[in-house]
Length: 308
Image 1: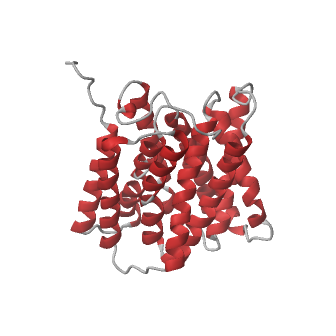
Image 2: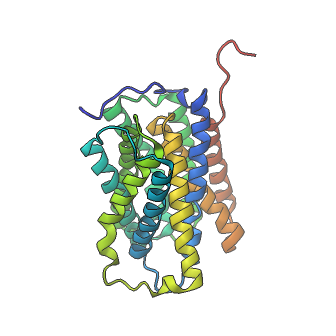
């Protein structure tokens, strides 16, 4: 298979040494920025639909990433771009926006977010092994179990849960799309700059979602608050965050990267308390502790054998 290539940093412990350790922190920083999207959308003016918010997020983020890539010369060189991986990167980042926001609309923010994000490490582990031969290892498995358990406790602690079967399927589709997108850009990063890879992927995704903006009510964007929300989602929670993610992904296996992305619901929960005024139950606090423990297991670098 054209996608299958062995990684120099593949397997358990690859993310904990040398450049891999730096990549872990870059991915954690990206996930923290992603965790601000829920709060930002909650602050958007009336009339901001999930579909238009997602499409605008890709449009603004893709344009910003393209400007950065051109200024830094990231689009020069790199040889021919593999058609399948390039198309998949754009298709799956667009699919994630559509399926995730549709899942949230059907089954609520709590269930949609936790299922959509919490199940992604499982898809990433399977795809990383089948396509690239990456073996996540016991450290990843333990961290993933802790993080998913933490997500589950956060979900149960929320109360008033509404489980919609179609919404659950859409959330699983979002999860699989995110894992597949991560795998696609991992392939594209071989021999290419992160600037170029994320710019091409997001511009392609923005073009795919452009029809959603035709005839849509975008008057809310002209509101100062709506404009700030759009800029934050496009420039900070998309352009900056996915640049950090792509740079970190160069030295971190796919499965590990997606598990680290579970810092997103952790950040969202903290912001819910600090900004929106939500209250955390003891069960939710236990969930946050488990999530933090799983992420710390991957983020803290182990000393090589024989070192002091």
